[in-house]
Image (tube, rainbow, N blue to C red; front, side):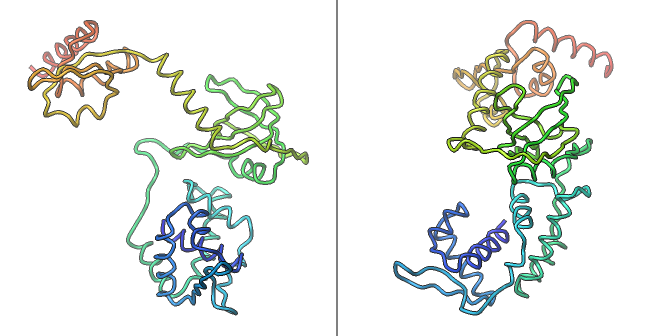
Length: 318
């Protein structure tokens, strides 16, 4: 959200006194041009921004002027950052409450023009990130895990595996990763003497210890996660291969975007394509939505399944 970036610019400038545009752009992962546009917006809102050229220059607030953003504590700034990562600010959990309080404090420090925009946005936009038909999965220990990660404190956790088996682990938390609203803890497990990934919703209890630890300097959370993701996809692709040959009209090109197509052959106005549908069971569950746009040519067992389903449906709707 641009509002968060504007607040971040003010936090950085007020805490450091003066920063160059390229430094702000690097810190906020945006372009220098966007930074200058944001500075113009802040100036138009009545915030006295000063731009000084030269090697010792940079962007700063007018001397003596403050927005009192320094009143925010470190924990509040962390919570503000977490909302940009997908933190769900609802359900009454501790981190969500802290986050709401932080945002309220920030809103009060913003210029009148921005306060009006924030109030208007609250009235005009509503973000419901809860899935249809199912309840959001609770992550009751997330705040304790976050505290452990931030303060480099070892923890004892009770963890439920996917098969329901429960175990006690002593961990050195290296970092938290959020992917499509699911939270994962990357931690060194002292029982296995290995770096492991734990799904936070399966952590049923957390006990913070007074012991601290050091994360190896060569460790990078982003690189670790990307390596794990690549390995996971490779293993799954090797294990889940079920090739299906389809015949469809060339006009159904958009239909192909839904499939993992491994080969395509053009035959006049027709396309013969091979798609990986991962398993027979998954192919069966997707088959009825496919046959309206394509003919399933192979394998024979999948064609027989469709014939059986259509025979039953014909009897029902005859």
